[in-house]
Image (cartoon, rainbow, N blue to C red; front, side):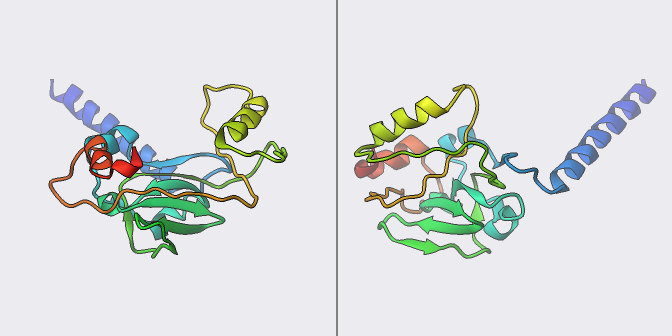
Amino acid sequence: MKRINLLGRMLILFFCMSFFVSVAKAQEPNAMYQVSTINALIQGVYEGEISVGELKKYGNFGIGTYDGLDGEMVMLDGKAYHVKSTGAVITSDDKVKTPFANVLNFKPEIFGEINDAKSFAEIENALDSIIKDRNYVYAIRIDGVMNLKTRAIPQKSKPYPTLAEAAKLNRNLI
C-alpha cells in the first residue's frame, strides 16, 4: 500500500515537473499561451495572476483584461495597451497583473485583403471566406484605418460580481 502511494506521489511530481519545464520553454510561433480560463472570468475570478511583463515572455499579440476586470488588454507587436472604461487607450505598465489573457508570438500564415468593408458584418463575411475550419482558434490581425468604438468594464472590487452582473452594471456594454 505504501509503495503505491509513493509511486502515485512520484508520478504527480513528475507531471508537475514536466508541466513547469514545458511552460518555461520559449513559445513556438502561433502557439497560444492562456492565463486562466474564460469560465473562471465569467464566475468573477478577477485577481491578477501574472504581470504584463511576464506575459510578454509568452507572446507579442493577444487580448485579455486587467486585475479587478479593469478594462481590456490588447497586445500588439509586443506592446500591451489598456483600453479603459472611459474610452482612453494607454500603454500598460509591465507591473500590472492580468487574471485572464490569451497571447501568442504572431506569425501570419495566411494573408488577405478586405476592401471597402463598411460594417463589422462585412468584415466577418470576408474572414469567413478565408477561414477553413471554424473548430480552431484563430489570431487575426487587421491593419487599416477604422472608426472604432471601445467598450470596457470599469475596475471592480471585492466581492467581485460575475461577468454578467458586471456588464449589467454598465448597461452600455450589453
